Length: 174
Image (cartoon, rainbow, N blue to C red; front, top):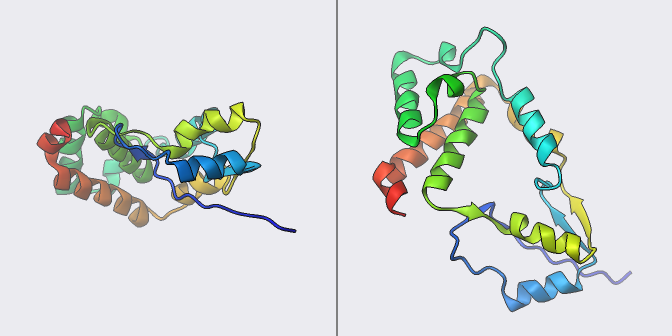
């Protein structure tokens, strides 16, 4: 069997002016019988949303801040306020979900837009190519949801670092 595989590492979010559809990439796409994404987040949007909210919310009666000291709570509250995220809503999220929410708000404020797989998805469907996935939604979100609380809080710490590195002024100016 003589098969050619082309691998394009994609970025989920890009600056809007990024020109990634080069002749080489589009030639490989046109020649392809199938296109594989990490997860078909567009086609499985309802599943992604449903699972995110079912696995991303703290158990009844618990808050994220139950596991943080006062200083950490205030740092996260300040970031949420600066980004316009209602802190009471964030406080009922699992730490991994709160961290991803912070990252999404940072990306939005920085002017980033949907990346390669989101903009290529309609092309795959319109050309009748087979769309395949390398992971299921359960594998991807289940991996986040099954992390220990300490690992989940590392997601938030990374988001805090990103926020501090860019700064609120940098987010608005970009």
